[in-house]
Amino acid sequence: MPAITVGRARVEYRAEGTGQGLVLLHGTGPGSSMWDGLVGEFSDRNTVILPDVAGSEKAEDDGGDLTVEALAAQVAAVIEDSGAAPVDLLGFSLGAPIAAAVAATRPELVRRLVLAAGWSHLDDEYLRTMMTVWREIADNPPAFGRFATLTAFSGAFLNSIGREAVEQNAAYMRPTPGVLRQLDLNLRLDVRELLPLVRAETLVIGCTRDATVPVENARGLHAAIAGSAYAEIDCGHVAPIEKPAEFVTLVADFVRRP
Image: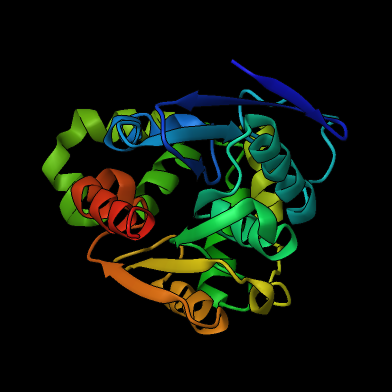
């Protein structure tokens, strides 16, 4: 697995498949493993690049405060190291503002941009309160994971997968020092000034039942990026897991069009 040093961070990434480069950027949590179930849906026609930025389980750094600028620099360095530029860049949740920052500051690296279930700032009082509560229960790991699961998926989806799968999802999200640093970044990031600078063709995806990042935030991203396309999926926050077929179709149709 390739690894590069960016500033004080050691960043690993994977690359699978052949064709046009497609970077899948994870959100708050353990890292690029969130995409494992979907890699095969893209790798037949794309070189799928999966970085693990600082705060994820596979990244190493000095443990200091995370910034959008630093994480965007890590993604840009991965793209350059992969030799696949310009790539199509998909950012999910926290990955969305980071991906937007890459597209705004390093336009030569990004061909098309997809922002899924993201936000640009914390003026949304629901979002600010939700992130604050999640951060404040970090000293209770089971509650931390259950809260993450509760807000990540719709009630209908949780009931459909059953208790064992719900418990597995709750165990996936743990309050590691890296995840808590990502949460701290969530609470203070603001990329509003960068959004008008995005020139890549952009698709913004919102999730209508999103209890982590309310769909109004995705609509705000769309409004702030001139010429962007917009689509909604009727599901909770983690559309790649809750509605994978619909999510893959939206992304593939956008990045693979002439």
